[in-house]
Image 1 (cartoon, one colour):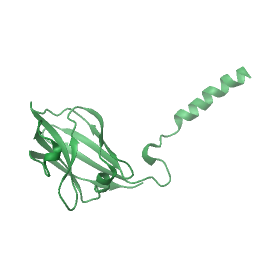
Image 2: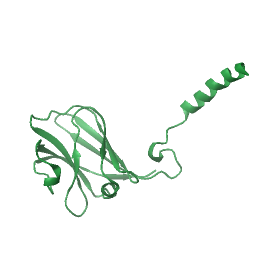
Image 3: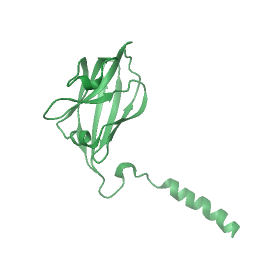
Image 4: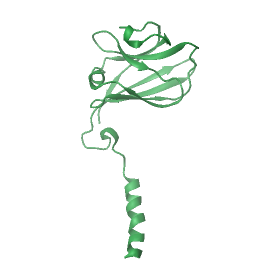
Length: 149
């Protein structure tokens, strides 16, 4: 029995590790749709890949490089839906890496195209709730695409 178990354990472990992950429905027959965007700064070559799943309450942001932010400033993300005022999403990452931004399902559902993702440079002391629109300069605006399947 011990010999059989020592042969079966590595085989089952290999099968488990070789299976695809099903994060947010990828690989399922009818996965939920996702909203995606690419924010790109041409002068520096810095970019961000953005994904939000329709049935989720967060947005994943992958910063592909570092972006220099002046002392006393922050980057802030905004959702500009087709109609209505911009919605503040929170502080935008400026250091290379993967980040999760909590949004709320109602906000994610407003990402339907032709919505846009905007990133502004704001004073670090200003609160996002104090503004119904970016108070600083909008550095980037990128379309949000709906991806299915």
